[in-house]
Image: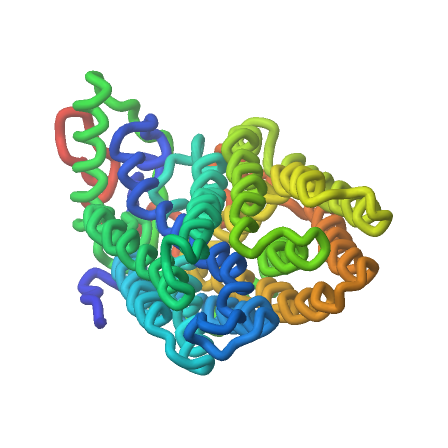
Length: 506
């Protein structure tokens, strides 16, 4: 996997980051959104399908000797454990070897593991490949969020990042509706339907893999790693496409950056940067991830069991209810996303976390009083998750933009892994035990835990959130490789682009 770093050690002046940030929205940007963002649809499909088929897998004749609690508890925790370890493993490689190599490899890992999950013949096999599926998905989080933020202009970065991360719930809608068909024994046998749901995920993943081949490497990453000529070629090509589409020349970039190119960044430097130089931002990232992980794991991994246990909803019908809350989840980032770029990060992150937490407390109170039906509980969840989804998506946005370029993928991986391990591994295990008791008070307690942590994260954001809206990544967090003065920089073709030409020396 070694990458040539022929240009490392040089100091160059470049306006490539400014050139990317001043681009108007174009068809090219849509190819990035489709090529990179659609994988969250697969993640949503995975998580929702497993939650909905838990009851079917535990029935005699399913082909697996497994209980519903093992599916929503152990298998769910293993999936998240795989995602956490995968994020850390692949995140380090993403910062070292590039965004594109890793988001291709991690998708391939996901596809292979999902295909083998569909072939499960034993509980241990199912558990193993749920872990490996998560291992691939975890790498996707680090590689893709890094690439998205480095390719999308600063003016649009907040809303695009939120909508892409929120597209998880398009997959959740598909998974919910797919499970209705898959669990209908009049259509498919018990031991076949759930396998086909995983197989469909493989087919969709293959399509995404083909589209993703056209997504370029991050020019920002190339610059730092001594490959400025490649970065210049990519950015010039993008500018030519945008100018041809818009029919007019692009504005001149407003700033330049001096970079001392390097081959890699050590773990020690990454740790010192994140936990010493940016310790307040580290507290923010951890709080946001823990809050959203506990809230979501109180819902997605236990909602089907709650519907069947407390409201006698047939196993084959839980998908309808999942589809409703999934729609609410998607519309949150879609409708609120622009406000993160206009009203601002601090106000929107804190308010979405606090609102969703308070609404969840209200839902827990109504549930404990017996005031909710399956339909009204779903409606309450839909409102809670409208705000929570925007907040949760902003956690990924936050950690991907508030740390220096050289640490970006590893920062995303670390906070995702740490926060999700706290809420995503312990959450399913705790909530599965609470919901399986059949005691209303225990399930209400699960809701309250998620609500309390969500509110706590909202308060942290109110004090510590960074006003990153419409600012370049290099302005929010100066790259570790940034030189102090342009005076010592060597000329480079990765400099200011002149109209009608490739580039002029800086």
